[in-house]
Image 1 (tube, rainbow, N blue to C red):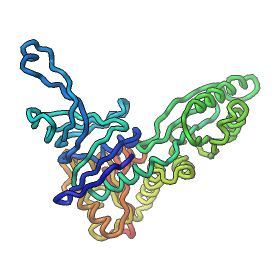
Image 2 (image 1 turned 90 degrees about the vertical axis):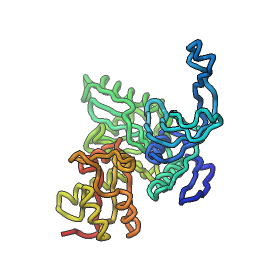
Image 3 (image 1 turned 180 degrees about the horizontal axis):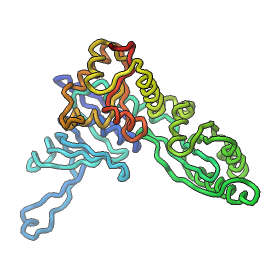
Image 4 (image 1 turned 60 degrees about the horizontal axis):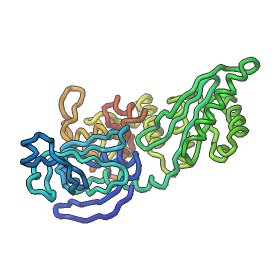
Length: 361
């Protein structure tokens, strides 16, 4: 993410002009934007003129710069865009004011966001700027008869491809070699800066030896890690062990995996942990929260006043006040991605939890 300009406005509002440079940056925008913000950018809009109406042509598209009062935001991951819907508050054509419009924000398109920024949103923006310098990483997990490749992103880890083959040596050696060759070929076509090769037992070493012989240029990118499983479980282990963090100074989902494991451990032991909005808010009030964990999807819903708890109503406690309370009393805050397994675990706990400094009775 690039920040081009920051301007302080009245009422503690600030206008930040930025350029998203990747799919990760677009994902971040989904959680930086909320109803009530103003977003400005270039767009096209179909304008219906009087003569067009007579011929029912549907009008012609015109390029214009508009400012929207934001009503809703959607991350279209596979279309590589964020759709920002709202009412036109300002544009070059006065006859378009007050009409609804959707601004499609794509990579390398400049937009300006005007709002009263919250601390966690500014932290997320800083993370997005810093992450631009992080190398791209692939995680390959392999065991007998099975191999998976995941690509690491800030919104989660996506399975890029997977392969199956025969197991063992001897008469099955050709099928095993074919599996390793498929893995090496797929890795050679990825544009990444580092590869984590992981798996149980000695299979990953055999895979590495084959790749080193057939695809020698990949060897300098590969780091081997022992894990007990492959696929999603194996990726979770890789992240938990900090292998990705060795090649990325700060890996968002690696931190999330460690935090959720510590939380579940403490919950199982009946130790210093809290979950659910009421219990977490009580802990924050006592100054007991060491680290607050909150789900991005739930946070956005609550701020948009559309979130619902299990009883069917909105949280009775303002999550923004809880976050402010935690930060004011020296606690850390991590906003989890709902796209990845740790975020899904946090969702099962109500979307908010906390590691505590001491146990509350």
